Length: 256
Figure 1: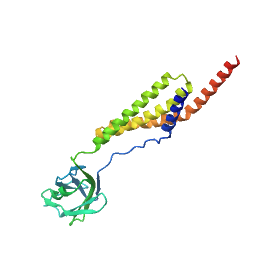
Figure 2: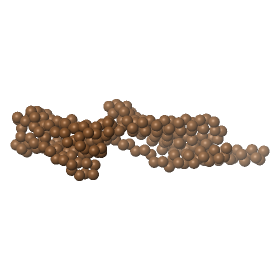
Figure 3: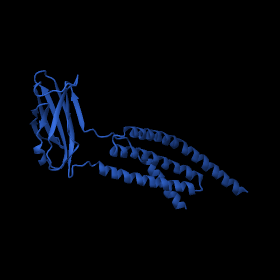
Figure 4: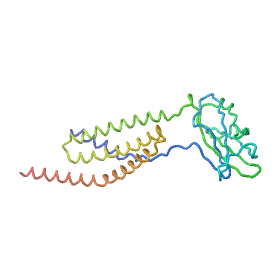
């Protein structure tokens, strides 16, 4: 029984030494810098290996939303592509086509697996207005997001956390030592706090449109962090009180 107590103490110590998980905002793949021209591009975050990437650029007046066409403007657009090391791979001019500018993506079929960054800059030679948009994408074997793997990993981690919470709760119930019950409250509350964070990540990956649910989970996480710190301050004091009380009781029983 003494060895079991030592193991529990070591596990609790390891859990409390772990840093609190920080929130990681969802990755943004598109960045816009509009001064006079607002650019809209049908760029994807993931592409399949070996497929061409034909894209179009639609340009609007930043102040009033008016859409520019090739007939009513003197706009030229340049597209630059870089690999993950920052080396420029290609630079091409977009082709004006009625109310849009086309990007010939036939050469994209030759790009290997990996991550790429792109920038599109458009300038109006008449009004001297301009705008740019940049972002990045990844070429994968099947053109699908790797978030599916991340979701599976998060599901596994959450299952393990729930399992530990159940085990710790069982130990709290079966233990006859009051100080041990108090000690186990800390890792249980810590694991619950981590669980709320992973649940928020899981929803943001699988259901990115559920912003309301994500915000609720984030608020629960902040509440759990606050509650954990309160317990972290109170539980040691309560443990000392309980241990001192138990020792006095043992001494009194020994004198009888």
